[in-house]
Image (cartoon, rainbow over all chains, first blue to last red):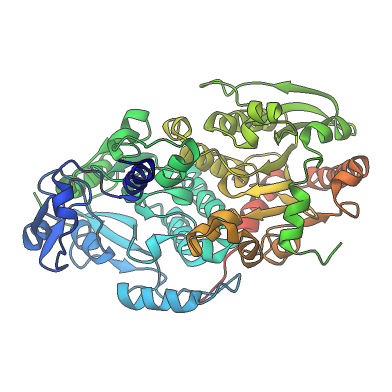
Length: 302
Length: 267
């Protein structure tokens, strides 16, 4: 192998997002029909989509908890019919006149059936009332701009006023570059709202899902009284690629995983999807919140 | 001086003779002494913390340290703090609160450091904690962006009652180079990105982020460091005097409102 070829191989390794150990060389080139099969980005194993979906979009082989739409998360988390949405009519402007930004937001809004990358509201979980926020990475990688920041801030302010606990399912690529400095300020704004909720005695549970990174990790996502993560998800501040470019080394595969973050002391517990409702409602119960109503299990609940 | 492009201002900021906090601190404060360490892990030379007099008022100073030589930059990691730097800053800010000292933050960083150790020690958590804790700190906080205000790494010292910027300083959610490589897969288009991102003091005044622009001498701060230091000093003396008269509850309420209202959307 001449040196140039070697560089190409090394470069390909760097730009390859899959870190699994299965026979990925064979599988990589195979075109997979999106609606029929699921290929796990962690272990590269392939499953029938139906099996994967019935397993709550958890990889049956390696337990990677894949990304969900906000509708899927809501259905898995809240008691049926209990959800009351907040602020569905906030729409982003274009603070720095970024080319084609409004167009992009409109398209995502239509595709994801929500006004922005986070859905907030009030619901009960196994009968316990809370304010809930669900970020959807399918919406511009759930980056945080004006509307995401505003919705989170209002959700915490509402919870402070009503003395309700807050549960945030975080997932984000970070601050939304397309809104310039205005997006950076959402980090301060949301963190301030969390602090006021906390100072008023409010309980905040952050549930970190795939991927929780950048300015969201560096603001409200890291400020929970209790921090939960789903198995195998990516949690970190700087992007893997950025770090690899800075230090000029390849990082270990489990770097910035939920398990890595727990070892480093930043995650209280790792909770499987099937156990999430029970864990969350138990935490609410342990903090003295009343059970408001009976509840029946959601689909596929253990 | 007022019609320079973002790129021209960035070139001034990157001038190797541009004054740093090592020039400004002795020129602005008297009897300054440095305090080290976060009491948790170690001491980060990328952030200087300490106390001194501003005119006749004792203040706490938190400052990001750019070097002028390679040796200095190696020591201060090119002003890219690790989590222990932010945690030292928070420790000293709380101390300032206890002793009712105003906090002066001097911001000058390309960003928080991106590396394995920084991740292991919780760079995200350290920044987040500063944002939350500074928001309700019961003492005046004034931040001055001296050169580069690099994203979350700058914001961690910029949750404040008033934010001032030197007239050529920039403050951005992402470096123009980073933006260019994401947008156009070409980091060399940073000049275009620098205009697109709206990062100058004038831009930030329009967004309600920057409250005061401190004029640099023609050609930039390096042409007359003493004059620049005097301008910063005069601003700080005035700002501290104003903010010290505000009752503490009102002060933190106003601080929250300052950030609370930033955002552009329709309803």
